[in-house]
Amino acid sequence: MIDFDQALEDFWQARQGGPFPVQWKETLDKDTAHQICLKLIEKHAEHGDPQAGWKVGLTAKAIREQVGATSPAFAVLFSKGRWQSGVSFPCAELTRPGWENELCLTMATTLTGPNVTEEEAKEAVATIAPALEIIEHRPPEGQGTPALSAADNGQQRAFVVGEKTAYDPATHDLSKVSCDLYVNGEFQERNYGIEIMESSPIASITWLANKLSEFDLSLEAGMAVMAGSFTKQYRFDNAVEIEARFEPFGTVTAKFT
Picture 1 (cartoon, rainbow, N blue to C red):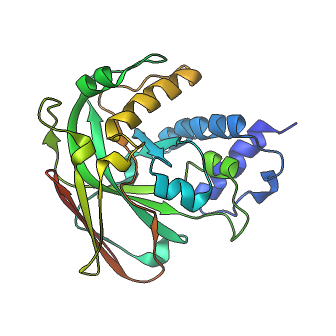
Picture 2: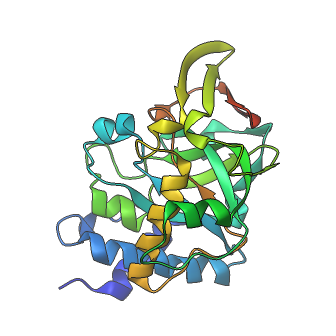
């Protein structure tokens, strides 16, 4: 039987720079991991870092294949982790970092599951912005598990957001949005919104609203949602400049030095 309070404290200390709690590797199940992740919202708020929204992870087939996952996952975005496009940040302050190329959707109205439809999700979205999710691989090499990742807030460190565009479901087909990725000025790949849940970022909103209902939570108005990567997950261990161009929603950039 897991000691929930102790596990919660261990994961909180890990997020403050303490040792990663691999001691829970064999006993932590995914449901308990999600409860730890949600309890960390209170811990962050108590330390002046309120929730800014949610992320939906493992939405792209490329990433699921990369990590051996079969379904999406959710985690929490915090206010101090919201960085503006053009940010410059030192690599030395990150743990085995990487990034994903995403759209950030902001909610106009609240969605409450469990039976939210994609049409309802479309009507609930206010704005779209080009974005990058900055992730960290915090467990020691080879020690990570899906449950440890869920309790550790799904690798989330920060999210870099560009300018917002008002979303019009009548004219914006998010399945057809393209993402052109450049790393250190060199083109890497182009992918489309249909890679998200094999549908579009709206499918992430629908899934998230319905998933949160299992925890008696709603997807609330004003929340930002990182809807999942258009591409595989990229990693870096040296200085890098990232530019992701999302047509028709603009460009987001970040530099790590």
